[in-house]
Amino acid sequence: DAMVIQNPRYQVTQFGKPVTLSCSQTLNHNVMYWYQQKSSQAPKLLFHYYDKDFNNEADTPDNFQSRRPNTSFCFLDIRSPGLGDAAMYLCATSSRGDQPQHFGDGTRLSIL
Amino acid sequence: AQSVTQLGSHVSVSEGALVLLRCNYSSSVPPYLFWYVQYPNQGLQLLLKYTTGATLVKGINGFEAEFKKSETSFHLTKPSAHMSDAAEYFCAVSEGMDTGRRALTFGSGTRLQVQP
Image 1 (cartoon, each protein chain N blue to C red):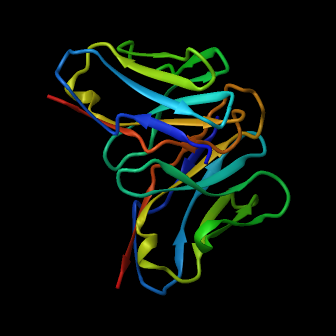
Image 2 (cartoon, helix red, strand yellow):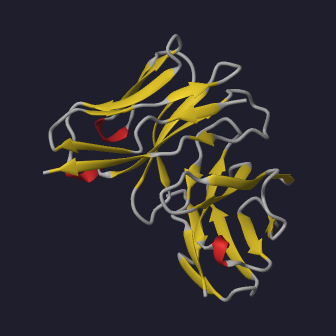
């Protein structure tokens, strides 16, 4: 089945230690998104790629970066994680910006 | 600018009772509207969507929603709740334009509890 896969499902890192979360898709979608979701809140969009075109949300901290080396893969890099960055990180894809998004199961990030 | 308001952060119903989750939106252009469901420790799954055409939209798991332009609403309903419907539900809007750079705007979510 075509799908969005996030690895790992659970990630623990230390305060200030860089961490990378990965997302892959077999849907061949043009658009890939990264969301941050804290407990009992809606997903908050961090950034998205339309093909290779990177779009950063205005309030996304500089600490968060992303890479999309090809259509299938997208990475979220957190350069110096703080305690406030502990959250579920969701990757999603869509064929174009106004179409339904297909979500992975997320990576739950914990900061020690 | 688009926005979504979900009335009621928590809704509790009895098994077999009607489920009604409310969603109101604002949009400067005809919207595309979506309902997603999220089970614990999982991503969001699309329940249904409205783009154009018929205003009553049927989705998976017996859910449906009706787009009412005059009320700027897109409420989600299910005639008879099952225990397995307990989850978080998110309403979302996009402005129906293929700008390529416009993502969804999500409501704050409604947690549905189903009592036996």
